[in-house]
Amino acid sequence: MSDFVEECRREWKRLGVPDPIANEMAIDLTADIEEAEAEGGSAEDVLGNSLFDPRRFAAAWASARGVTAPLASVDAIAPFERDRHPWFRPALVIVVAVFGFLTVLAAAALLVGRRGVSMAASIHRIVVLPGSGRLPGPGALLPPFHSFVSGPSFSFQNGAPFIGLLLVALLGGIALLGLAILYRSSLPQRPSRRRLR
Amino acid sequence: MATLDGRRSQLLRGVLDLCLLAVIDEGPAYGYEMTKRLRARGMSIVGEGSIYPLLGRLERDGLVETRREASNGGPPRKYYSLSADGKRSLDGGVEEWKTARDAIDRALDLVKVEATP
Image (tube, rainbow over all chains, first blue to last red):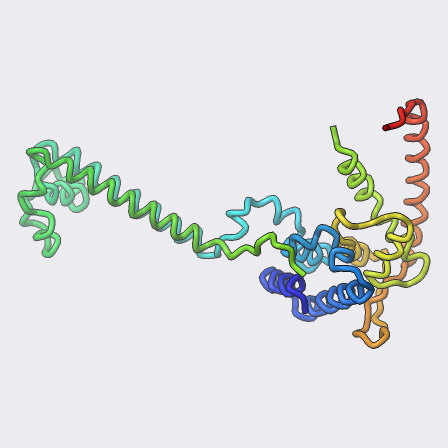
């Protein structure tokens, strides 16, 4: 079976074309290509310029036979949307939500911390005691959170806001990196436009 | 303005289903056999894509019927033949094409084409 037909079979499998129909199309295609080559021609005599885009050809044929969704609706979706994995959207939502939460938290801590309160106390005030009006000391936090963020070096006094900005930048970078990795991993390998036999 | 190749491609795309029905009307044929019949009439599919998706649509629309027949030494081939609906669609399409062609001819006949060097 030629590379072209193999590529078509992979696409039909990806699209969920039932095996009997995919086998039938593959057999017909193979027989026609072999006949053309036996007569001194080439696969291009059978396939025209479809030879250079097996995935599109396979999708168009399956769609025309009514065994997959209409091709127009597939094409109407951007390639990014069409090719991503099913878990991409929930993962993206979680990453964006976590990044957003941390950014808001850091920004709020930054603002509250300007009044001379330690970062730990600021976060505690925002998260644990909303609207209480009482400003607890760092000792109110549970370890190890307490020991990690309540040291004097995290106070927003004496230029420490830079630490907060760095934290926000770091979180943003991590989130963007995560998005980039998710995006890359969501794309299936595309066949090159090399001429397939 | 469309290039000559682009216009030819668009014109062919608009009537390729009709041409396929016409070559099937000559007698049952499998995919590549139809391609050869079209080529014998000066219609090369090179550059125009393949006929398989179109055949799939004709089959889905009930304009052609299919059956598998043994071939010489090879695997059984899928032969296409016209259904009654296909024959009606062909006849109607040919009338439609002739009407459109005559109107276009009347419009274009007034143009004096200069010989290209």
